[in-house]
Length: 296
Ligand code: ATP
Ligand code: MG
Image (cartoon, rainbow, N blue to C red; front, side, top):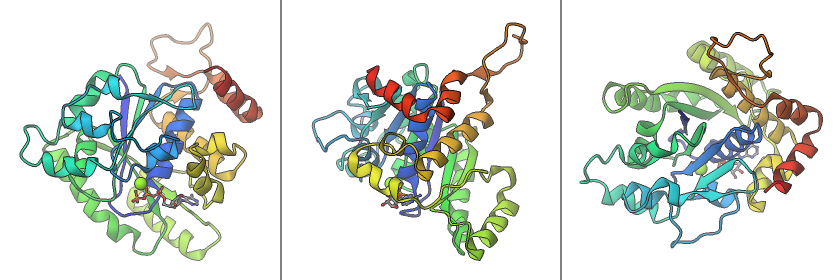
C-alpha cells in the first residue's frame, strides 16, 4: 500500500511547493512509483512540472467533485516514475461547492484510495490555508511533512497547524502522524538560524529532519523551466539537498538502500528499493538523469 504524505503549512511562501515537487521527483528517481497531487488552486506544482494551464484537463477539482476517477486524471512527467494530478484555479470553487456536500472532508481520500496500490508514494501539495482543500489533504494523508523557515516566530505560526492536526486525529483521521518538519531556505551561517534550529529541535525532537534545504537559486529557477531541480541542475546544492531529504524520508519509512543478499532474512519486514540506482545516483548522477529521460 502506498504512503500518502501531505506537504502542508498554512503560512504562505515557506517552500511547500518546492518541497513537494523536489521530494516527489527525488523519490521517483530512486525508481519508486510516485504521484504528486496538486491540491492548490495556485497550481504551482502543476506548472512547476511543465503542465500548461488547461481548464479542460481533468484535475484535482474533478476528483473532489466526484466528476472523474484518479486514474483518468494522471499525467506523465519527464521523469519516468513520476506522475502528477494537476490543479487548475477552478479548484477555488471546490472550497465553496463542497460546503454542503456529503463526506466533504473525505473526497480526496476516497478518490486516491484506488491509486494507493499503484504508487508507493503519493505527495500532496497543499495551499497556504487551513481550508477545506488542506483538510481534504490531511484526511487523505498518512503523515504530514511541514516545511518551515527558521524564523524567530516560526513556532508561534506552527501551533495553529499542530492544533488542527490534533483535531483531525481526534475525529476525521485518527492515524495521521507528523512525518517531519523540514527547514527550507536555510542559511546555517546565521546565529538566528542556529538558535531557531535548537529551539525547534527541543520542540520536535526526532521529527525535525536532519536534512535542511539551503537557499539556492536553482530551486527557484527550475519551475520556470517546468522541471524539478534534479533535471534542471542535478549538481546544484538544492537538487542535492532534496535527494538527501528523500533518502531520509524513505529511511524513516523503513526503506533500506541495500540489495537483499542471498542469505538475507526473508522474514524481516524491510522494503528494498533498487539500490544500484541510488548508488549510481551518487557516483554518476548525470548519467542516471539521462537514462530516465531516454527510457521514456
Ligand atoms: P504558497 O504558500 O504560495 O503555496 P509555498 O509554501 O508553496 O508557497 P514555494 O512556492 O515553494 O512556497 O516557495 C516560495 C518562493 O520561494 C518561490 O518563488 C520559490 O521558488 C522560492 N523558494 C522556495 N524554496 C527555495 C530555496 N530553498 N531556495 C531559493 N528559493 C526558494
Ligand atoms: Mg505552494
